[in-house]
Image (cartoon, rainbow, N blue to C red; front, top):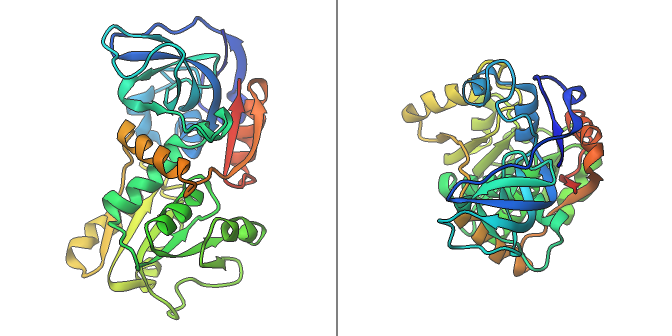
Length: 321
């Protein structure tokens, strides 16, 4: 089968199209015929091997799984002997390591029925980013109706879902992004949008009950200035958290949190079918719509990754197979 692979860590230049053997499934796994795959920051981290601590689980010198991608949408081609939730031909979406390929393997507990009102490309850009946003808001942020929520990085993959989900849960949402993406965040339903090149969200004029810090650049002190006295800040991702752990700033915040009235929460997303099922309900109800910038065929996956590296993606990008 065709797949996008890498035999070393590095930038998008390490990605190439090749032919590899079709994967074999275990008892609790599903073989998915890939119709589309999503591109996200996690896939970029797996490509570069940074932060370095992640190599302990994914390969010290080179990736254990040479096939790129994690988000997937497609049809079930085969099921393991212990699989009970899916049958051959079902349309599904979820997490399948190595999804930049014609076929990929997913655990049964990391797949859900594809929303009927989404194309495969739209569905493929949901699982990782929307699941992260959902958990950050509910499980960690404990968002409640009527609260004020600030989302830093509102135009990115996780941010575009966080804006919509926070609104769906009844919060008042302020999104922070660059000038060129103000229209996108406004279209997602944000009550207020801040251009970080012109305004300072932490100038003291307004405080928030909950802040989702997606991307990781403001100092902990600056975040606290924008928080209510008993507000919560959730660190989502760590693009500027250092090459070793990627979480230097987040760890400092989490260590300080027990001594503060404000809550600074470290967050690591989980991959769960239950979250996908909840997202399916919200999507089919029209409360959440994937913000897909564009799609690329499988052989152009390196070009799509290059745009992500440069910060030139609005929302999400899909790879179609």
